[in-house]
Each structure stands twice: as C-alpha cells, then as structure tokens.
Amino acid sequence: MGSSSPEKISSDREKAVQELIQGRQLANQLRLLLGKPFGGDDKSVAAKDLVMKILGSFTETISILNRHATDEVPDQVPANSPCWDGRKSEDSDEITSKTSALKDRRGCYKRRKTSQTWTRITPSLIDDGYAWRKYGQKVILNAKYPRNYYRCTHKFDQSCQATKQVQRTEDDPAMYRTTYHGHHTCKNLLQAPQIILDANPKDSSFLLSFGTTNTSTKSHDPYFATFPCVKQEYRDEKPCLNHIQSSSADFFTLPDLSAFESCEPVTGSDHDPDHGDVISSGVYSCTTSTTSLDMDMDLVVGSVDFDDAFEFEFC
DNA sequence: TCCATTTGACCCTG
DNA sequence: CAGGGTCAAATGGA
Image 1 (cartoon, rainbow, N blue to C red):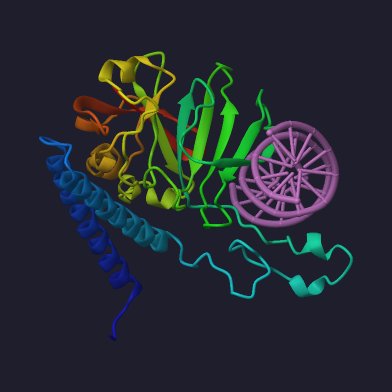
Image 2: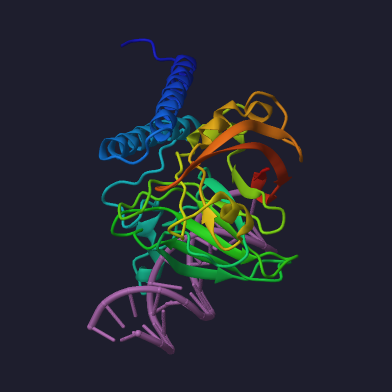
C-alpha cells in the first residue's frame, strides 16, 4: 500500500472516472447497435435491458467517485444517531426537557449542497411517472407564486432521496417550472433513474436544464456524465415523431444523453457557457417499445438559471 | 383508519 | 439575519 498522497488519490480517481466514462460510451454504442435493426424479440429486449443496467452501473459509479471527490467529509451519521434519515446531530445532550421531540430536530436535517438538479418547464402539472408526496409549500420572496416541495413517496420505505420543487413561472402562469433534486433509487419504477425532457409547446424544442450548487465541479468535472442513461417514455401507446414534436401534453426522455460527455464548450474550457453556445451536435436516438428514431439535433445553452443551473435546449 | 395535504415552526446556508 | 428547505402536527378526504 504505502504512498497515498492526496494528489495521487485524486489523479487515480480521475483516471478511474475516465475509464468508466469510456466504458459507458462503449456500452451505449452497444445499446444503439442492439436497438437498430430488429427491435422486437426476447433476446434483443433482454440484451437491451442488460445494457441499460450496465450503463446505470457506470453512471452510479461515476457519480459516487465524483461525490467523494467533492465531499471530503462523508455525509453520514453514526448508527445511533437520533436522526432518521442520515442527518447529523448536534448538542443533543444539552437539552433534556419538555420540548425534546422538537429539540431533537435541531441539526437533524442537512440541506443538500452537492446534489444534482435539473429543471423542466411544463405547461401543466403532468405526471412524470413517479410517485411524489408534497411535504411543504413556501412563499418565495419577490415571487408571485408559492413554491411547492415534493419528495418521493418511497423516501422512507426505500430510502429514495429524490425530491422536486414545483413553481409557476412568473411570466407565464400556465407554465410550471419543476426542479428535480437527486435521482430516484426506489425500485418500483418504470425505468431506471432518468432525465425527463419536455416538449416545449412554443418552439418545439426540448427544454432541459441542470445544475449544481457545487461550483467546484463545474469547470472540469465530467458533470454531464454523471447523468444516467435515460429512456423514452410516452403516455400514449403509439407515439410518433410528429406527435412528439407538436404535443405539449406528452413528454419523453431521450435515451442517449451520454453524448454530453463530449460537451467541450462546458467541460473542456475554463469559461461558463453562454447563451446560444452549442454544447453538442449530433444524432440523438429516441426509441420506444414500438418505434426507434434518430434525430439530428443541437444541444445549445438556453439560459443560465438561478442557483447556477444551466438551461439547455434541443433544437 | 389510513394516507395525502396543509401549514406553522424549526433549522441551515450564505 | 434573511430567505429558503424540511419537519411534523393538524386536518380532511376516501
């Protein structure tokens, strides 16, 4: 064992991340190959399912490595902590009285600082396929509409940490901005953790934004690569492209966001992306259980949101 | 009775 | 200290 300087550990970690990213790219290519000609038979379906699992493993491992790179102190609590969901405890011995139930909450929750976020802007409160439970509502300063807070229904039974915030947009009250925090880890899902893209009703482009409050990872980290593979999801049984591009009510997810790994304007330079920057051009494969379609699109920076979230558009 | 929502209070971060 | 995120008791509906 011996030498394990912080520099060497960091270097090894970066190499490991690069290897994992490459592995995931290869797995993704395999998935595309499997998805092309004959989509239907059992073996093909099983193979694709397997590839999706492999991709998920790569993504999760990369995410873990990146998380450890940015969190020197693991976000964990002792097993005997009174805090029920992994939050730290502090000075619990100083209070032993009347309001113990409330006082136990002191320091018991810790706001996420480094979790990934991404935002959807949707014309209505559409079902995104997950079971959410509302746990709060806040009036936000200088905001016309309150912000609603949701957590995954399976937060307790499956320790799923996914949450989302929903708020009407100021300029268009008919639209809702939904900010997702963290990925679903609960089991009873249609898909693996996913990014959901929404069909924008106004310009038929797709809005996706994501960001992090941890700015230390923004310039160099393969931040995009921490996103999981995503699968397309339709509410209709027989979707078609025209329907996808024109409908505002339906939504789907693109299966191949690993292309983000080549997001050179963001990950390969030392400046933050500006409005209109083309992040990645190429063919994005969109598949469902019944159809498969490649779309030639540009991923461009739409806007820089609050909280350092960057909003992107598929055009 | 169970479960989801509401809402005021608590607590963390900047 | 202000603002925002979360908790949990109270409430209501199925």
